[in-house]
Image (cartoon, rainbow, N blue to C red; front, side):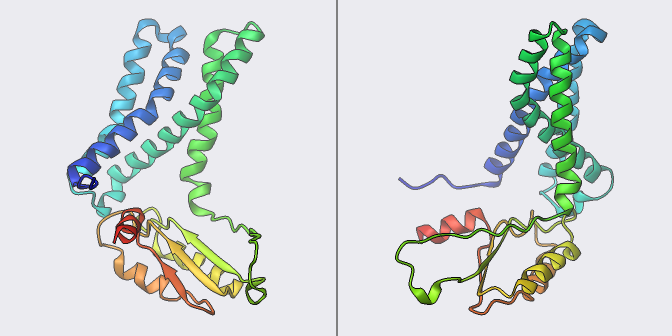
Length: 233
């Protein structure tokens, strides 16, 4: 059976749904944390915050998912959403432990929620700051049975999910390319997504990735959807 067409409407609906669902754990924990201070207003405040943070994403989807929206007030609002979304997801994973610990020591329920949110904030804020700007180089040795002796020690440099955009400028991609070239790999593999959206950064992307050097060349895949199309064809 053929896959359904991946239309823009489907993409927007999926993005907004993921954006809302990802905030659900954080909204619940925030309502618990605020309850002692604001009482019955805690739930509307938590839901209102999630709706407010989701609004920039809806606006971006509505104006055509333009990379130009990654600057100014809208760009800052989107960064806030990404930080909160990460906070919510990590806090949701930490909550069972923090809530049980709070109950075990006789602490109020809200302390477990605040602790989970604090742990989530470390990951959420770190994800849009330190983790976004500092790429980590990992060296992994893969053991393959019956590997020809000529390929023993063959080195593949893998660069993935560049998402070149206003958040990941060409200068940052250039530094990653320089690090890979310094390794003098046998082969370079670049997997998508290469850009976040639109075509604003295509020329910059081509220029920076065109500087990659591998003894046996460079293999590249534009993105997740293009890889599936290539597989089907």
